[in-house]
Length: 364
Picture 1: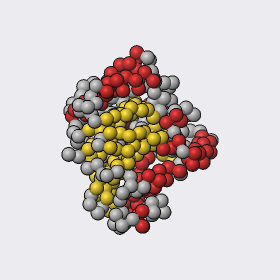
Picture 2: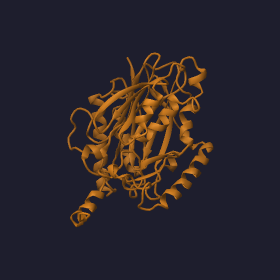
Picture 3: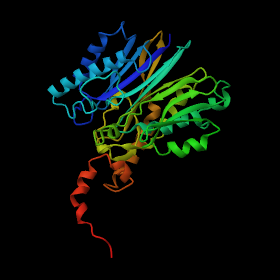
Picture 4: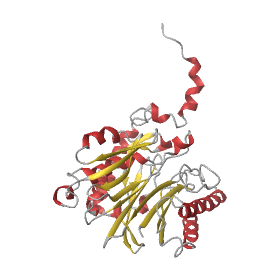
């Protein structure tokens, strides 16, 4: 039977502001998941990226399992109750509904799940981001699975040489489309260069349709129709043995590319690769962060995690991200630091604009 790796996250409440998670929230989540270990769950790991509670779980129940999603929902609800007792900021803001309805689709939490037959050696990297949106993975995933200047294996590894298939979601119109790399490279770039709408959901090895990567694509603002916080996405990437090497998977994050999110979910800023210890954004509620935990799977057991961005070789990327943050902040409320008008529709800005909408006069 296939193994399933599920990564499910929710903003349970910030300590202090939006900067981090309270230790008692992590303790409670571990205690609750431990009751299911050896039963529904093979193994689990609990962590946090900024103010987001991250549940990493292995099991044999497949994607979209009612039991697994129900377990995660129960953890989030009980942790939200504790967050409210502690008066944490924005407690439970990712939980858009009160009752569980079979799975977490449309309920607020971010979900990335991938099912596969465990290989002889199965290294995976779980990426978790804070203060940004699901489209933040578009550029790194394209470079990992389609750019030979990033991934040497696309050229020299016969198991990868045929390329990869990308599943792209239109998160506004709720549609999907597939692109084969490298032959449709220009076509996919026409879409994924607009990450607020088009988001890479799955990547498969074209040779045999092996699942290689998956992301969370939930857009909280679109689901709620209003500003409810950032989307703070997660991503799972399998590595080695006919898939990109660990170093090839991490390499795109040495460039802190601009992503949407940051303060009030309304600004562009650099995605800074950080260690778990540094995943505590505070400057202007940022800049946006990404952390990477490496695991070696062994019969479903999560050996690890290894904090992949704690490596000193990412220091320059962090320094560069801070320089970019300085540059962007100098724009103040002006674009391109602030997001474009169409992306601001789901923030609190429309409430401000309505105050003087009637004062506009027609031009002669």
